[in-house]
Amino acid sequence: MFAARRDRLLAQLRSEGLDAVLITHPINVTYLTGFTGDSTYLLVSPAKTLIVSDGRFTTQLEEECPGLETSIRPPVQPLIEAAAAAVGQLGVASVGFESNQLTVAEFESLSERIALAPGEGLPGRVLVSGEPIWVVDPPSDANFPRRDAALRSGLKAAFGFPLLSYRGVVGVREAVATGRAAARGGGGGPRPRRRSSPGAPRP
Image (tube, rainbow, N blue to C red; front, side, top):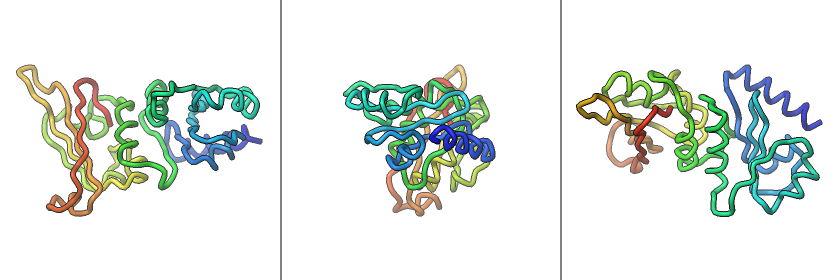
């Protein structure tokens, strides 16, 4: 029953052009796996299905989810960081999320784990062009692989600019904002969240 439900979810992923989906709501995790605990995420992709949880539920997971691969995070590691690490290990470019289940902070944490080729995604475009790029309404941008996550977290705008040296572009800095005023380029919106990408571009 649970495997059939996950198979239907995988078929939906393919139809929507997504590489994977991260399930974070406990009710949906239960629906897809049979696990009745909490503080647990489910990562589903054609390559693997992975439950991300913690040591409190090791026995329960073995009893309720036999055959499913699990990743038990250390007590000091936040759940979203463990899930982001799992996403990064998959090497996927586009990840789906549930509606209203993603914060901006979680969006940024997951973004750090998704690597794209030069020219792909906002940082990839900045890396290739060497010029600042402003994206209004990231969820509607066709070359914004994180658009599903951007929609879930309420992002209204994103801005990327190159970090330059005598060797050329050595990295990309990105800022995202959730306020409508910020999306229009005006004042009064929320303070953008910033991160640096000193190596390969992130979407």
